[in-house]
Length: 171
Image (cartoon, rainbow, N blue to C red; front, side, top):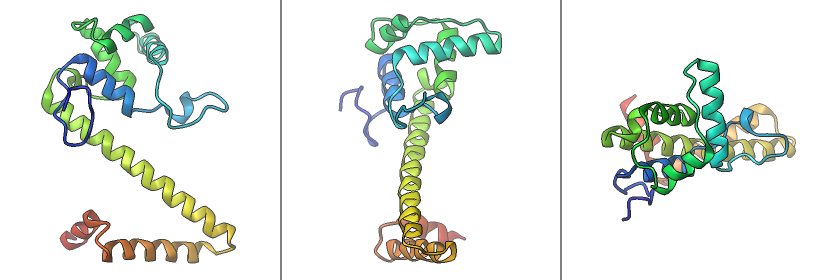
């Protein structure tokens, strides 16, 4: 598999550009970073990351600044050896350990954590949607909770939620 691909079983990206592209592909703006009417779940733009780095540099007193063009050069692999302060600022902007950019073990760990968070977010969205439908049908909170427990139990019985079963066995 090519280094820029980001499947679960792919090796850790080997280049700064591939690691940075992984973050752009998987990390999303928080609700507080989105403007009115902007859709959640969209990717950061290069300009947004540069602006975020510049804002963080002003707030935390580091004074680190960066241009969107320079971030774009790193994404495309044109710039391959940025200053340490830029690597640290990129890590802060994406909320990851700075070692993500230089240490394969840290890269793998952070990738796994980001993928797990994205999966948990997706599960939460599905659970919220189920609750909304049940409430629209006039069911009480207690009945809604009971149905959620029933769905969870059915998933376990059908082997669709193996990780939860192993957690129960160890508890």
